[in-house]
Amino acid sequence: MSDWADHLTTVFPEARVKQFIEMRGADGGPWRKLCALPAFWVGLMYDQNSLDSAWDICKNWDANTREEMRVAASEEGIAANTNGISLLDLARELIDISRAGLKNRARPGNGGLVPDECHFLNAIEEVIETGKSPACELIDKYNNEWQKDLKNVYRDCAY
Image (cartoon, rainbow, N blue to C red; front, side):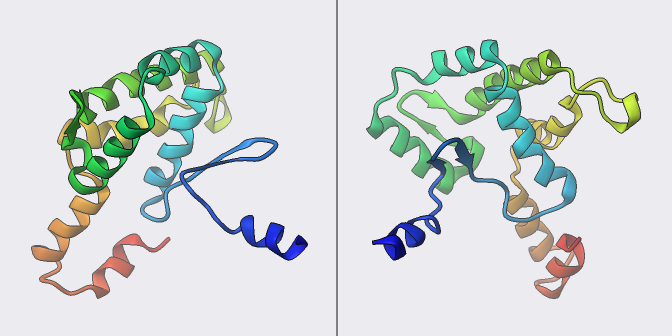
């Protein structure tokens, strides 16, 4: 049975609840984009006002609504609309909530030159403003700038 318990630790859904909550992170991409997702979650979850605001948005969603949103997001990205919910509008609302949480947290960076962690959200805000996910950006580069040469993905995305 202990082997089974060990095996279960390798399964990683969108979130795992143990003694703490583990959220999936970004699997790759430029450093500034990798830092954006954890900052987003910190802003939502480490500040009680932000957590309450986020909960108010989704507390009435049932399992079917959540699953339809997950599928729509995987197929259409931020342009998805399902159950009368625009993912773009939802993203705008959640990024504002996260930003407020990071401001309340007030953890300075860069030797005190940066007052909080809000700057990490800039990469997510670019996606919201342009409607282009990192995957869309890579596809555009592949079809145009890279002339369908996949070797360029290693050059541009390695760090």
